[in-house]
Image (cartoon, rainbow, N blue to C red):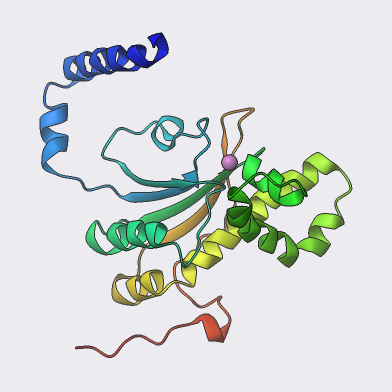
Length: 214
Ligand code: CO
């Protein structure tokens, strides 16, 4: 029970600290939410969006799942994306993976874990797409790291294929979509430089024609 009670005590301490630094902090935040970023990250407890980017509450709208996946039938992800892009009007969507991701490593293996195997299937499908490149890397650690990066890039592509993102690009030329990978060992983020801001790089069959103006 101690560790649990500790959380509530730490919450009180955090409120005191924040209020001391900025007496209006909570009043201001309670009135408006206007983050510039949507974060799609891994559920891994070691990759908290705000903490690793040095940001405060109110600055990043966050969605996390196992291995930072963008599955286009996932209503949870689609709802977060639609709200962030069309209501909050974020300028940037960041897919942030991390080296040593358990979900990505599991996708390279053959072990059954449970219901999560069905989620990990999506990551296995990414492996299949890049199988030749990945299997040409002989060092296991390097292969794992590359797979983490390719999985992030694939999620960036998958975001760009959604009608939500393509319609927003058509309407307001935003958001920019980025792929990042965080290192658990150094704490540093690597920008994969795969920023998308329009659908020009997508194969034609993924490109939507803008709906007729009403
Ligand atoms: Co992970």
